[in-house]
Image (cartoon, rainbow, N blue to C red; front, side, top):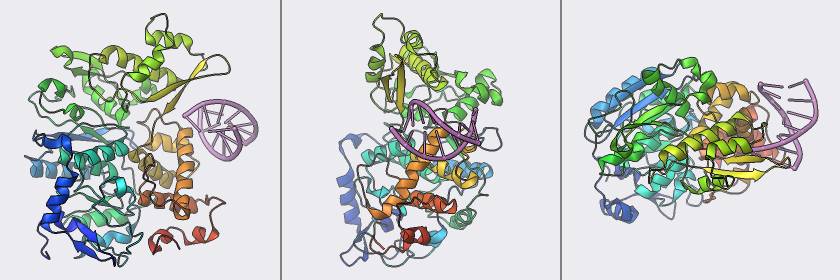
Length: 504
DNA sequence: CTTAGGG
DNA sequence: CCCTAAG
């Protein structure tokens, strides 16, 4: 029990009544595994060779770059990962949005299961409970442990993180992906997935490097926007030219998602994907939304070119399309009709989304189960007779992290700057959106102390470390909300860590 | 056009 | 998220 051979073992702990941590036994682990496993994973674990590409966003350089490597999945894992990591380190400092250096040591100290701040309280400790079977890991203050999650949970977390569904059943792939998102780094070359303060806890000796990264935080942290693009090359025909062959045709596992993009990086991804195909210059971004990128899809088995509609979509493939159809009694093309219906005051955003939907509808309708084909677009009547589309697009953790990072870099108020730097690839987030989101984050970050410790039903519960960072920045910019007690304002970021029992 | 703030 | 006022 003392020798930590299996990385998973020391993650699995139980909090005793007195607050002590008791390592789980192997049996317990097995039990948990069994318990967590739900019906859908009798499927064999995916063993396809993976292919992951990481694209560094052009945040400051203005040029999307791209690195890729083969195989991220079990088989060639280690080697490929090493390669990938080394590649990435060149582009992206592995530190990204480090939120707090206070637990840097935890990764190297002998007892990883102990919180550096001392013993864990039983009550609201909420910091080291990895056995949570729900989304509790968001409530945990610093640690997110992916190792013991069921596929289902991983799917949930995936959605929260990236804002899109996935059907990939490969745990390792999911964990890796989520870890990438949460750490904002592609360097996830590890076999165990515990994330502390948005840093992946390494089980190797690269923790040192990792630690350095954490200290290199702050305003000069440098651009670390990552674009991820996943597309494990399970089949011979791989994205040589970034033409993704729909895995659906291959018939085996439901690995469609392997060929899809991660939320939010579409613009960048698209641009870089487009280049080989159409020689799109990188400054195409100015007219970005016009760029329609196609990918080779295997619709109908004949490799048709499908406009790559990269917007993130969550569930309900057709429903909303029907909603749009409502305004089309004439049976006219959806796109056309909407154009007609829309008052000219409509912003590009709406128009483009309309186009996207149009394309999506037309070209993807044969696509039976792609779950990425819509989000909540609701048409609301306007006083002036027109229709306006309300676009509720949930903020993903990745986006939130980017926002926080942006604020830390540019300060609050310079939303368009942040938009340019960190959200260049997110065509749907306007600077106003950023501002609004920040306002909400601000509220949340301070509200955390007052009430709500674990609202399980929060749409996307923002991990505590991020909220912490938000509050930090808020204070840094004198944005402390009036309603928050002065004590908190002065105690600042420490308060959260110092908190012994949830309240001060 | 961008920001701030109210709705 | 939308809208508006104001710089």
